[in-house]
Length: 627
Picture 1 (cartoon, rainbow, N blue to C red):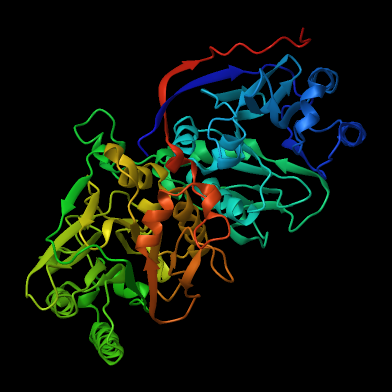
Picture 2 (cartoon, rainbow, N blue to C red):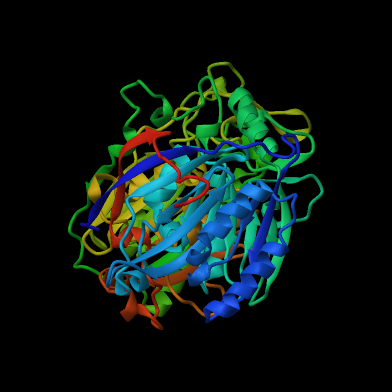
């Protein structure tokens, strides 16, 4: 983490005439077997080009190290056929012992060779020289960027693509962990609101295409996986990328906010950078105010020295059934006033009593207990604090809205705040406990709504938004942070909580949610668990499921999943995470991690890559006919 390199960002304007400006972008994705000698590659290369349809706008080929020898032929092919080509060259020795790992981007008027920016352990062992420039391509197809394998693990690079609102992200890789990259892509299609194209070699498979929306009636998970392959297989596929619809969605959300819809499409509401709102936008997005840099002002709260550093942490995740939607809407999210509340309170008390009895019988120490978003009634704060003190347990709980005046419920004066309470006991049985409050920075489509017709969501009422992040340092557990639901859709928020001030990522990230898009957030958990090399704890309501504990570990069964619960399952999950092993793995070379519990390290642990300056349009592509 102490290593830092400066990154130059250059935007290349790619100009040529598409065959049809109105038609969707036609992608041709090729996944070929990796050939071991130059002659075999030459034949496969010729055959691959022969199978590219003339209608293709964007062509993504799979990697072979001998492709560099075909640079002139690729440029001539792009010019003759009017294609935009992405061709990974892989590792190639040059100038003695040093090597390059490059991707070629070709269009009718020229090409640029991209040197890999984030080097894997294999690249470093092979003495690959890292690149210095991130290229963005403004093309007739849309704004595009290309990432080379390990670059896709580096959150600094992803944040730059988000800042520049790239529309098409091409990821080329030679990687057996294709499922991890799928989870990356599911998360990024949402957080960056972009098309994500994954290209791999046929030996490993896993080529896939993701979008942040789907057509009505398409029964795809999240609607965003347009194409995918499992296992080793040759692939030559054509996929339509409706970039025009993506632009329309982005522009519509900016004009109308989360109420915008296209009748033929289903889309998950994007992060707030793509949303217009007169008063909903979080303070960190209000440029020009004193709060505009709130993400860089992480409140770092050291807690009392309760215990020496712990080797592990036992975490309980309370995936419990939430009050009914009407209980929220009819009380202004102060559901302790609802008729059904007494039953809810007694059930919650029984869950706490059962958990405490379970811990006593097993003589176990519980380190963390997590409840969902807008879940804990404020009148029970004292009971929960007493539980925390008795058990020596840090309790993290989303709280019902607070408003001392019940007569304001259906008036224009109604307002609320979505908050999470963090109870931190000094030591077990001491009677001392710190209580902190984190206020949600962002407003989702489900926050602060009045009752609508037919029991549905109605108009919005004002929501007081937070302006700071909370990151805690605990002598026993290290650093941990807390986010509330829609905050987790924002890569800039997650990145700042983990990395602001040049710190290492938190060991633990807790996300409390009330979210129907459980599969989407599961993908975000897995992506962040690896990209930030941390444990991510998701607590959702049983109504939607998806709660769990995820980490950068090789687990039996589902990858990186320590425990999780499905939709409709009510209960308190228990899991133990290896904190000492995590800290050690962060400092261990990747070669020594092979075959062990922990995965290879992501780009961020190999060093930060931060922008030096932006030189829009300054890149000079090579001529169409290279010398």
